[in-house]
Length: 481
Ligand code: SIN
Image 1 (cartoon, protein in one colour):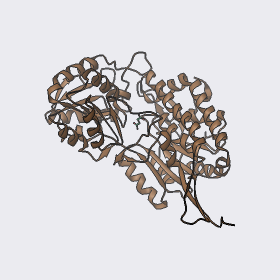
Image 2 (image 1 turned 180 degrees about the horizontal axis):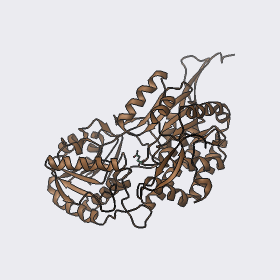
Image 3 (image 1 turned 90 degrees about the horizontal axis):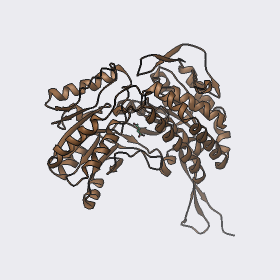
Image 4 (image 1 turned 60 degrees about the horizontal axis):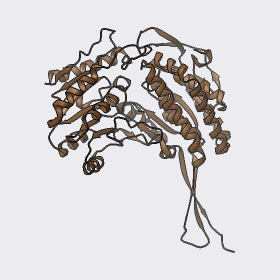
């Protein structure tokens, strides 16, 4: 591992912090400490906001082409170091190395996308009511952006926020999860190499999430706040943002239904289930949480799903051929086991799998359960683990009703080959993203985000940059001779 990519303190105003207390980052696969990190606190985050505020005028004054070139260079450096960055990511987060490489490319592709989008921030002219005037619309950067990002995608969740922010001309302060902060610091190092000026991109790593979060949500110099994480924390941060009326983006929890209708290609649906259920050991907001299958094909689907699940290999993400790495912490693994135990108590049946792996406490095996009903805790809460719960339904209306019976609405998936049904169900599902005959919706070219209590705002695509721009209207009058 190159020394430059392995940093152990916050990156503020182009400087690496080394002073003060430290905290440790453990490899979730081995429980061995892999880094001792300078523990940033309130004063450090205030300095980061100050740096971003002071760097703003010069950064927003750069031409779109200049910002674009720097972002493009950043993308190229990340892709050149893809293997090293993936190794670091697997060490701190646990996901299989192939998935980690995929995440590095996924994150880098947001940076590439917004390097291009920086040049396409168009305004408008609107016909005016009077001949001597014109209405002109310009778009301007919102200002300093602050973000808090989760441990499940230590690289990509930062990339897809910072890339549109910098492209728009904003400066940026991020607090990555303290469980997995090394990828964020490596991104900062490569950002510096790419020519991002000091103060434009700041990374604050610390364990006092409440104190850091308070500054990022309440400092009046921060114009916009963006968060990816749980709905419960999102609500708290949202309320903190109210005092300074910040522009806010929230990418919160999901409870994704995966519906297989009787006309579906069952083999394709099984492949889609594997992709959407077991990615990152089930630890994503868009992972399938409930499998709804038509009663007439439930037996065949379940048998085929079990056959596919049997091939999944659990183990250390650093080893070749692993499909499911460890759960991030022992506590998280316990919560998943507890949800499973409760569902069995309530009448669910284990079709396949023994949850506890003998590899260690936070290695969980994939488990398939049937007889699940919508009122069970496992169907009401985000599992964030490798359990596949199967609920049977009789009609299209019933499937839609069950799918929508949740206060969140991030991603949903369904399999059908009936074009009429495809339209009806797509329109009826109360979700921000719908995978149709696909178990994957994540794509830099598409708007990622949810409705209901899954949040607000979109990340990625041409729409994602709007969250970092203000619309200004110019009434241009006195045009007649
Ligand atoms: C998430 O889990 O929050 C993001 C998943 C993705 O981008 O695919």
